[in-house]
Length: 402
Image (cartoon, rainbow, N blue to C red):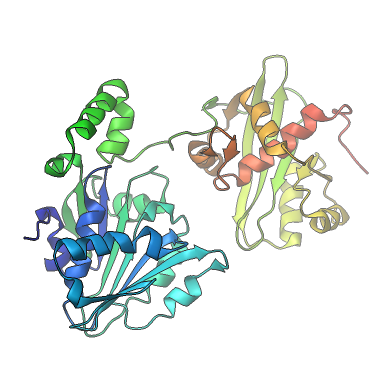
């Protein structure tokens, strides 16, 4: 007997294109979706693309889950399984397993070139930070003979994530809903929907989390969205008035076409251990001349400490009149810069929208090793450059370089 939570029935019955599947740990969402995919392959004409952002080996990490379900249902005779594909022998329909990012780089171009895709499943979709990648693959789901589906499976993270903005906030849909709005169906389950499949010890563990850490319980077990990312690095900041106690020094990070170019003004009150911060600009796709013009507009002749990884660009900005020097970098400079910032109170000017977003999301990848995630850090890196330069520079105060 096939037992699937009725909350997942819309994936089979709804005419929606998009299915946003959220839930906490132990909710059974991956189990239910994977089982539905296997059943879907008994219909002819399906090519199902199953992705994760990083997927080094489907045969080790995902396919065993499908094999387990096939064996449980005694359907071994109906499927042919390879290292990256599960194919139904009766219908010819198949599930293809791919990673969006691999050791050889971004595979978006290869994925969007796949033909006759009827269903795209993005598992662990919270790891997909670039909405443009989603749009490109979404456009490849255009099978003319079958219903087209795009299924995002995720554990909710911060409300700054594009999935929340696009599918919940912009559409006016309450997080945690089980509903349909327009071309989007929402499915939300928790461990409470899956209790019969959970052990007594696991349920006791959940109750312990509920009592001791209610916020963690709401997020991880009930699948609630966070206003601020769990494990954020900076909690020592607040929004307030930008004050010029002494000389302002600017920090700058360069992104060119792919990432944002940023400029931030810093002013350090060493007596009271306060750093005042103001975002000046945060823009993609700028030319060197455009960066120079914006620098002169915001910083005039004030010192700008720029990313030393771009010496050619720093030289060109100097030639265009910017008072720019290279940041102090080296082994341990990121950890040291973070420690410096954590030792001060950070006051963020209220219109610094992108800086606030980064502070809400910049978190540890591995807290024990003090390794931060390499994202939500463009302005934060610029702040590190400026602050480290000032507090490590014995000649601080003499900032104009002719």
